[in-house]
Every structure is written in structure tokens, then in C-alpha cells.
Length: 461
Image (cartoon, rainbow, N blue to C red; front, side, top):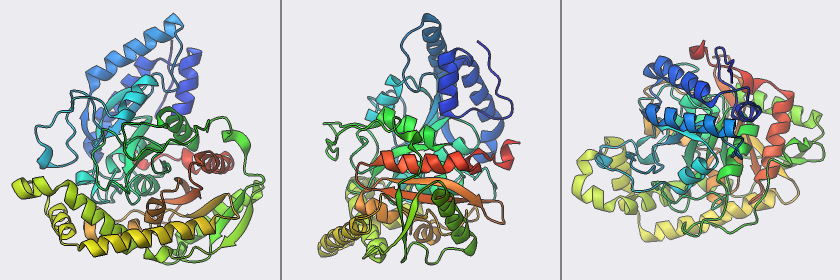
């Protein structure tokens, strides 16, 4: 088998088809990705650890399976990175914190196991903001401009993906931590419906708000990974036993006939003019593809920021209470202060936040009662400068993503333009519960008519 990759790597969907056809070698693909990591990761620092020899061994096994004519999984031979919150047997899960020094996982997380079963080559662990409690992900830098942040908390996964240091990456999303870094680095990020993808074996930040999902180059790739990892896990207490959906089957259904809701309140407030213009231009593309744009109001969504901060603060403080008593000095100052603050929140305030969360979820359901998808900006701005204070940028970057965590709805971030500073702008598509298929269909239809997702960051040149 031969491989022709040039200066970039193929998408996961392209690579999967080529590997099945025998025109792309899993070994050479893996070596190409490892070479890119050697060349570029010293600059962007996206990986915590790279399992080069393990990846090579997996690639040899993948290639042998192709030669034997074995039945291949959907991700066969595809190098995939894991955010360093996902357990991998016999590997540390450090969560970006000195608190976890010496930790080693006994077994794979549910998602890790499913990725292996799908044939993925697990190439390494990526940087996370400490315990996913932030949106900076230091020391990782944004490949589009190394003087800016990649976002977070899945910043390492997004930076690695953006620079072509893997073909798919796993993230987690509590208030936007898949979609924020995907949006800031010109990628696709999918937050599935709450409970749709197992969280077993993934270090928690907030039990009732955490989601797991992929960051990829294209919507088709996100669908491919989602199809491989979605499903009911009875060992996950938050899992929902919902009917399984083949999202790949309807991916090419186009936008014709879709009713897309455009919020008239909140979601377009306080966005930069460039972001607003790019998102409205994206909506016109979808309209040109046959979708109908419908103005909708979203009741109570303005309550989100305070209630999410309260819920995350209390739940994170409870998760970390033992370590905060015994080794608080091992947390970074920012995380330590956040956890200490969460421990001081009154129980009545937490219960009130849960009540207001139901109001936000009801408001979003009402807004979607007559539409198939909501469309909003993912972020109000492009990537902030490197060195930005986590507490200053988190409220800005999570403002438009956190409502979908509160409601547990599926949400997709995808690139839709660039600012005058050359940094990516992102569109967010939101669906009804467990209707990832329609969200992905709409996003794929947009990418079939645009080329924003094909752009490469200057660093990779």
C-alpha cells in the first residue's frame, strides 16, 4: 500500500475510505502523524504524552488486518487523541493537575474501549485545563496564531486536531469545552445529548452538566466518531437508554425542508460585528440550500450564566472535597479559588439554580417547538490573547454555549468564516434531544456548500 499525504493529513472520513480501498497504509499514516507531532508540538504543546511505540504497534496490526481482508471497524487505522480526562488502561490520567501525580488507570474508559473496538489508533493524551475547570488550557497555543489561546477545557485536543497531529480527538463539555476550542481553532465540535455518550471512566467536573464528544475536521468526521461511541452504558449512572440512530445514513440529506430557528434575543447580543456578519452569511448559505429561516424567541436563556456557575461550583467542590482538605496546595491558584468558592455556596442557592435550569431548558424547548434546528454564533469573539486570565475570559467564551449544557441538548460547532485578524469564526447548530442526526445533517449540508473547514492554520505551512 502507498500513501500520498503531502503537507496535510486526510480527514478521518477520507482516510477510512482509503484504508478500506487499500490505497492508504495505516502504518504510513501513523508515521506521518507522529512526524508532524515531532515537528509542530514543541511549538503548540498540545500533547501531555504521545504513545508512539504503542501507536506503531497498533498500526502494524491494523495494516495486517487489511491485508487479511478482515472486517474493519469504522475508525480502522485512524489516529485518535484522548483528552487527559479519559482513562486508558495502564496509563496515567493527570487531568492537567499535580493533584493526580502518580495516578494510573486500571482500565479503559467506556469511550476508550469503544474507540479501540472501532479500530482507532490511540496516539496520545492531550492537554486539558486543570480538571476541565477553565477555558485557557495552558500551556497549549492556538495553531492559527500562537499568541492566542486555543480555548478549553479541551484545548489540547483542538490544537492537536487543528495542526493535523491526529485525525480526531475526544473532548469533554461542561459549559462549552468541546465547542469553544473547536470554534477558536476552525474545527467541528459535537456535544451530544446529555447521557447519549458514556462518561464512565472520564474524570468529572460537574456530574449533571458534563458531556463527552468529538472534535474533528469535518461534520462527516464528527458523525463517524459519534456513531462509533454513542450508546447506552448501564454502568454510567447518567446514561439514557434512548433509541439508537444511524446518523451516517441521513448525513447527505441536505438542508432542503429544514426549518432553522434564528434567535431574536440573547444569542446575537454582544457579539462582535464580524462574528454576527459571518453567522448571518452562513444562515443565508443554508437558506440557499433550501432551509427556511424562522425568527424565534428563547425565554429565560439569560439566566444561564449564574445558574451554571452555581451548579458547577457546588458539584466540583463536592468532587474535590477530599483533595482540597489534604493537598489543596497542589491545585493551581485559579482552580483552588474556584473550588473553595464552590464549597461556600449555600444549599438553597444550589436548589434554586436547579429550578432555574429547568426554566432555561423549558425555554429552549419552546423555542424549538416549531423548528428543526436552532442556529447561533458559537462564540461572541475570536480567540483571546495567550496569557488571558481564566476568570476573565470564561464568562465571555461560555456565554453562548452553556445554555445547551443546562438543557442537555445536542449542539454542533463548525467554522463559518474568519475575522480581520485571520482567526476562525464559528456557527453553532442546536437540535432537539437525541436528534444529533438532524444537527449533523444541517452542518454537513453547510460544509458541502462552503470551504471554511478546508482551511489550514499558518503554523502547518
